[in-house]
Image (tube, rainbow, N blue to C red):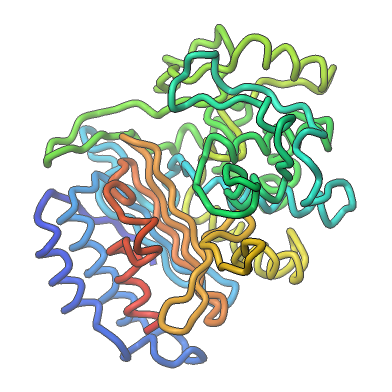
Length: 407
């Protein structure tokens, strides 16, 4: 089921009212976990999602639902290019922002299962390089922290590396999560974009996906890539995509990238020395963000992930287990995924947000075999959401899905 609609600005309160009327509340079509999802259930959900997207001013939106290891529904709303009236479809490509993290974490778990990496290996055992030149302000952190403190791969993977001692508290930090790029390269002796291509995208037939926007084999993904928009106070402006992990001297203007976050020359030189003839640039990719994909390709990843084609059932269960502090307190993050309980059910999920033009949502209800995928060409899927305080239900899009299909 693939169609497209339009999106316009409006009021969030109206959208939530419409969602309640059109999407149902508790009970209804989603109440029986074993029953097939009826076509009219998707139709009403589609109408409610369209109303919500319109009210929040999303330029374009693509969505999909996976049920029992198959793509059960997909839909495009609004426009991949507003000025040219190019409709958004399930085949539209978007940047993923932090939804890149669960995919990168899957490769790390592959290396663990292959006996090439220990989750409790000290980060000081790997060559960790700065992402930014000194003076980067709040963006900057430096690898010396790994020499000075007993931080492990697990601590970085679970966002618990900044507490004292490491592991004692959770603090989300995408920049630190990006350091796992260097771990993957140190273990495989391959360039990170090549690792992701060989281990994930090519084997799964994710032909519209790339680990970074600049990879030379990414023509299909770039051709399908939605135009980015910055939307504030109802005003929509054509924008640029944020760049991260871009080598010195690379001209990114042709690719509509903002070249603000350049890799230091010394870090690039260290990668060249480590990788030798297997060196390639990062092409604006790393473990924390940068991937490009479609909801259709993410559904391919999701199905492979859940059916043991990427990691074992035991490894997936480990990734879906919330971390605990040494004192036994439960934290909101597992291995590359947020983990929480909603209405007595485990929910694993990740949001993506790279303002002002990128946002995404990847939500799984494991015991119902359900996955919800959302990608947009603005940051409005995730902007101003109280993720830390409220978890996944900070998102009205997540609430709409859960109330209809997992009440």
